Structures are given as structure tokens and as C-alpha cells.
Amino acid sequence: RDLLTSLGGQIDCKVRDGKLSFCISVPSARDVIVLVVDDNEDLVHFYRLCLAGTIYRIVAVGQGRRAFEMIEAKRPDIIVLDLMLPDIDGWELLAQFHEHPLSRSIPIVVCSVVREEELAFALGATVCITKPVRRRQFTQALDKALSQVAEGELRARADNPAVY
Image 1 (cartoon, helix red, strand yellow):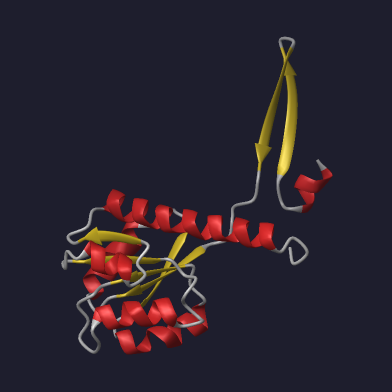
Image 2 (tube, rainbow, N blue to C red):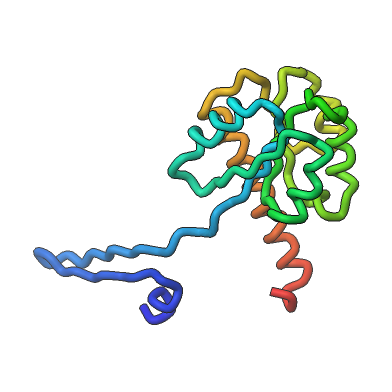
């Protein structure tokens, strides 16, 4: 009880008709920052509507060349990348994300009208979805990318237990 309370949660125990019941509330996890690299502002707005009430928080950039500024400033947990950008080839940017020290460990969800999944995976994509995208499809892609973040953290803890 003390540990849970110190983390902002609580536990209530009740006995009713000879039966013991517990009600445990835990603090919510931190927000998951999702960097959307897409020049379509309407689509970014749609993504925000899709994620209302979830742990995901959108930050967006409409120009691929500014993506690394946003990565450095916002430290996203997931990147959603459109391959059709006005200022840079999306394939080139995907490869740069995979190679750059700031972004190489960030899962990338490619969301585009371009249907080249094999190439996207070869260049470092974690998940590929095709536009037009539906809400459930989008949240499932983020959930899948987030699970890979969690798996990576668990592996890192197992490899370096003294750090954690």
C-alpha cells in the first residue's frame, strides 16, 4: 500500500457478505510522443482526433528536412512518416532515420499511399499502413510500434541491469 501510494495510486479493500474485494488504481503512464512527418494538415488533425483520450500525443512537422529538429526538441517515442513529402524524398528520410543516432532506435510507422512494404521494411520501417487510414488501423499501428519500444527497453534492462 505504501509503495502504491508513493507512486500516486491507491488501494481499497472491502469485505461484503464474507467476500474480500480490492479496488486498485494506478497512476497513468506518461504520454507517448508521436512525431508525424506529413505535409497534410487535415490528416494530422484527423490523427489527433483518432488519438483523443489515449496515451498518444501528436507533434507534427510538415517538412521532412525539419524532422531532426523536432526529434531533438521533442524526443518522440514513435515516428509516423508519409513518403510523399514536398521537400525531401520520403525513402531517403526513412533511411536517414534508420542511420541517425537520434532516431535509429525510434520505431517508424510508414503511412503512405505508396505501397512498397518490402522496401519500407528494408529501409527501417517498423510498421506500414496504407492511406486512406482508419482510426482503428492507425491506433493498432501505434500500439504495435509501442510494443517494440517496450521490448527494446526490456532487452536493454536485461543486458545492463546495473543501469536500471
